Length: 138
Image 1 (cartoon, rainbow, N blue to C red):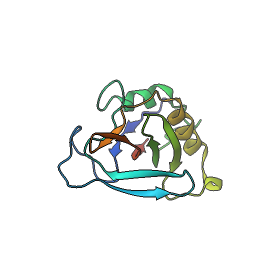
Image 2 (tube, one colour; image 1 turned 90 degrees about the vertical axis):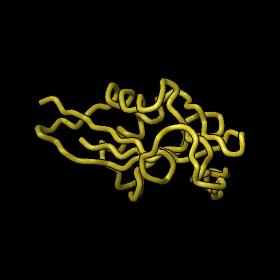
Image 3 (spheres, rainbow, N blue to C red; image 1 turned 60 degrees about the horizontal axis):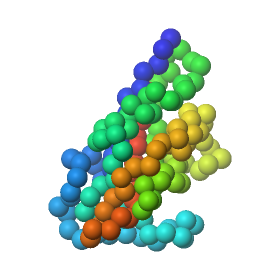
């Protein structure tokens, strides 16, 4: 049985909003000690997939390989960082330790790393790194 995928991408650390400029105030960030970079969670302009807003779901849908199970249903809450150059780094599954990742979680990680460079987020006119939250429901 062919499985269908529904993708919902949440940009930054908030709920889904219109693309482009955000009118929520000053840029906010935290320093990621492991990656040794500042990651912004409140930006002036959100990161965007190069083919346009909302097209990232097609990228995932075309490349994800699904578990060999009939009537498989489930969801994951994946995320990745779009760095200041637009590269995808540090994909992960929110709320899980790496040792607990399922084959589907690992598939999300694999496909995330295949993505082309994005248009990076901007803060005060400068490119900045930001985390993109990508809940996926099967």
